[in-house]
Image (cartoon, rainbow, N blue to C red; front, side):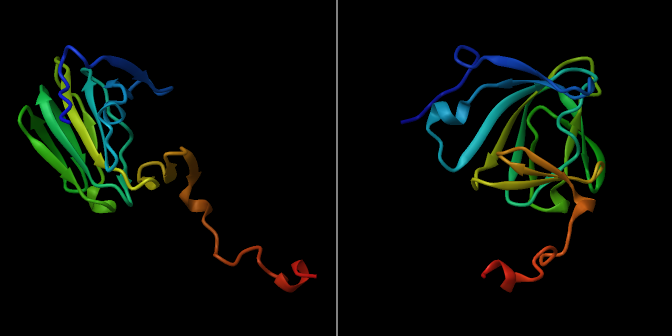
Amino acid sequence: MATIFNEKNVSFEQRQSPVPEFAWHTSRKLAEMAGAKQLLFEIRSLDPGKYSYPYHFHRSVEEIFVIISGRATLRTPAGFQEVQEGDTVFFETGPEGAHQLYNHTAEPCRYLDLRTNPGIDICEYPDSGKINILPYEEIYMADERVDYYKGEENVAEKWK
C-alpha cells in the first residue's frame, strides 16, 4: 500500500547537539510508519546558520538528499557548492561520498534524506578522526586501531 507523507501527517522535532552549530529539525520514524524494510528516510529542515551532521561518510550506506525547499552549501571531497530546491544529490559509500550541509541563507533548507538500510553501518568522520558503529552509536577514535592479533598471544593457555 502506498503511504503519502505531507504537512498534514509529518511532524518535526528539533535535534540539538551539544555543539550549538549542529542543529536541525527532523521528521519522526517515516520509514517505520511506511513499513520500509530496505530504506531509511526522514525529511529534515536545516535552520539558517546551522550545519547538518559533522562531515562524514558511510562504509555501507548509500544516501540521497532531495532538496525540497531553500538552499544550502554542500561540502564534499570535491569542495563546496550550493544546492537548491529541486536538486538531488547522491552520496556513494566510502571517502568519496563524504558530505555535510551548511545553511548559509536566511531561510530554512528542507530536504529528504533517503538511505539504504544494511542493518549495520560504519560511519567515519574525517575532521575528528572518529568511527561510529551504527545503529548502536558506539563511537571510537580511529587512531586507536590495533593489529588484529593484539592480545591473542598464548592462545593455547586459554584452552587448558
